[in-house]
Image (cartoon, rainbow, N blue to C red; front, side, top):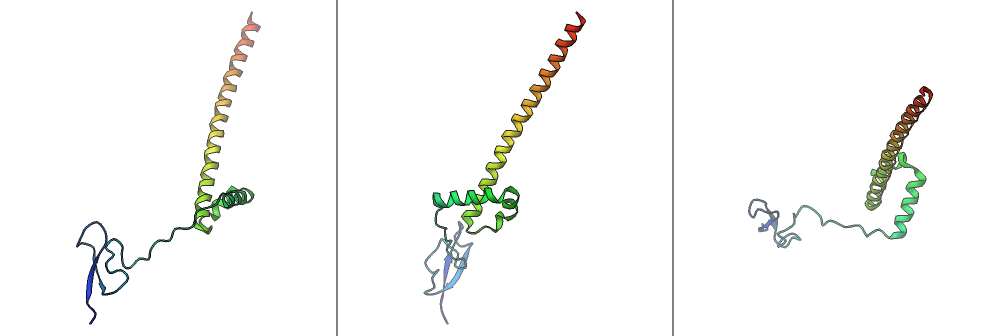
Length: 123
């Protein structure tokens, strides 16, 4: 029978012990779960890729990117799609806020012009 050794992971020593066979890959690594593979970070995005992907998103349009952004691979492209959508939303919010301010200013100016015209007719 193969002897088993404790392999602890997590913050609480003893509470998260897992017993692994001697000589296993996880033996001696006390900070990782023996059941989970090591995470693999994708390579960083190059500026050229970012420009190409942003152009692709722009050609496809907001609605298509919004519907398909979870299907984009590699994951870094999906993350860029989310950032791109947030940037569009932020720009639209800025435009909407200025449009509202300009509309209110136009209404105020129209009311003032109407008051001045009525006063000029009364005199």
